[in-house]
Length: 404
Image (cartoon, rainbow, N blue to C red):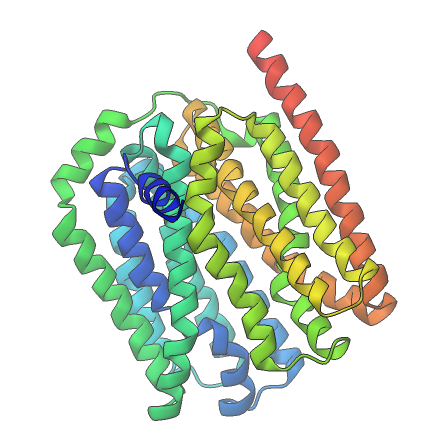
């Protein structure tokens, strides 16, 4: 049985193009090097001496830069092509990471973070368009899943390496390593995917459709649902760890184990799970609806079963929901981008996630401060159930388009 499971796991990665694997490796190197971000609040308070209110403004600059960078990256990708934008984003963000350590004072650092994220997140829509060029229609969902695995592995390794660098070097070392890994990622891209080849590949798959995503009502409705789901899900990486600590008395190591289960399950199960769903041709909207129900149940469990064992159940439900939801939400965006300029479509998709980040963390903290944890978890449960209803309406909208 173990051998059969192993073969199925390995088989779930088959059929993906060399270019998709290369993009995943580039993404892994880039994300593993993003060590400043997890330690940013510590750096701002300990090294720069900023107040918590000022740290909040810096994080707002972080989110604003991400939104503008995603929009600009999508627009430029449709004009110049994904290769030049990916190269430019990696090079300029690498330099920005190194220079950010020299920004002295509150407002200069806010401006530096905004510029850094503008340059860094221009990479994301370009990378999505690149996957669109190199993944067959049948392998789009698994190709996105592979990129998600690379991002999760990179983010899992980054903080551990970052902590070691701080201990042996300094916070300044993080900025240097972050910048140098950006340069390493672009060198990998130049070596593994020459510019002329990439331009030929993109030209061969370029869409001639011209519908603007800003006039695509179905897609905008989808993005609204995405933001709602994202706001609730992100609590697992902001307010839920506080709940573990303040209500259940877990220490940092125990919280780390719970959060680590999320990454481990994704690494072990997401690709086979996606392949299983696709092999059996399950309805994609049905998968998305059930995934959001699992998200909702993960919050219900936190209230109904106030014992530590059920914290693991809640994290398990949220992780399975994540594995089912995000690849198929991404697939919907990809398929929708066939109707118009793909850079603009995928830029709005990444902006949706940025908006979730901007709203989600602050909203969760404020709700807890005013109403407490139990009421907050019920409110997010209600938000997720509303999202499931909206997904039913989204399915109807898509069906009416096909009939029309």
